[in-house]
Image 1: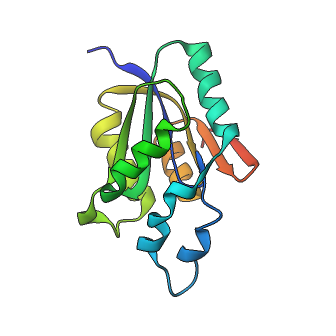
Image 2: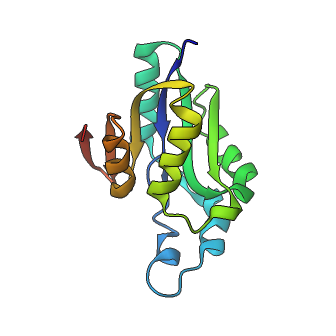
Length: 157
């Protein structure tokens, strides 16, 4: 089986600026339902959107894989937000099932990588803001960018 080339992109704090709602999930009184209910107000991070377009422009056809910790119940709103970016690309969207909502992001994303992505895709690059996820991806042999609101760390392991 020939694997398709792909890039992995995180959504919250990577492709989308969530700074307007981040305060809802910091500290003791975290309100994840309220946090996610405001995702329709997110602004696109144009730097990441342009990076995606650039890679695809240079590589030709490849699969765009959005791997997010957003709960599955926000799929419709997430698809709507992605469509507003006008990437004009097909993509796959992996969202966290409700049954594992408390699973740490790095563990969840490595499970998705191992079960759904590695068997089917040759991952060329990733973008994520969570250092634990970045380290887990790099440990798995991926190359990518740790994106932190304008500060980037590009590399492998």
